[in-house]
Length: 175
Figure 1 (tube, helix red, strand yellow):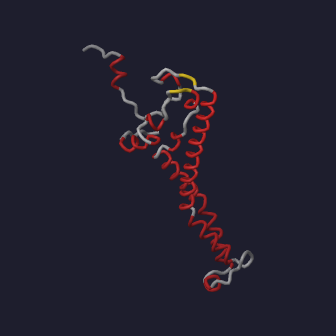
Figure 2: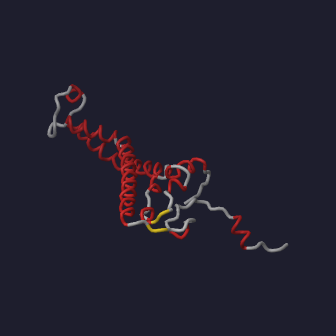
Figure 3: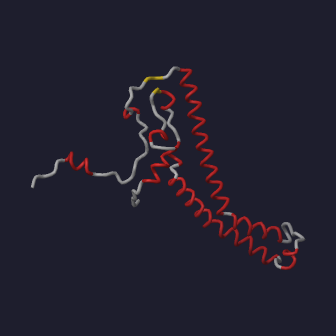
């Protein structure tokens, strides 16, 4: 049998992990033309606004995940501080009947002890959501503002930040 050509092997190999869109301007199909200075400033403001909107979306997702995951810690520490006689000492019925200073101290300690694993869990959930929805690929490079004919990344990837493409791909990779 004849040995396979290198070109045939390269054509048959598939990429396991789809890479981020190209930031280099050499891979663009259209000839690149520089924008005028006024247009460049306007497009720079538009790209900056889009990137700030994506940053706000990332912080909103992160805040939501951390709020939901850390809610048990906040509740336990709140009731511990509310019923302790040296801190707040509420006159609520559960502080008088159920929680004394020892149990309030135990709640405070328990809340701070379970905080560390819950922070790790919240960060893992946020990172998996950001990877699933490709939130970090939504940021646009400023080459979009300088040159005409450079397409927006979500236009190239088939949907907003490639989310539509991510749902249909069954590519798995071990890292």
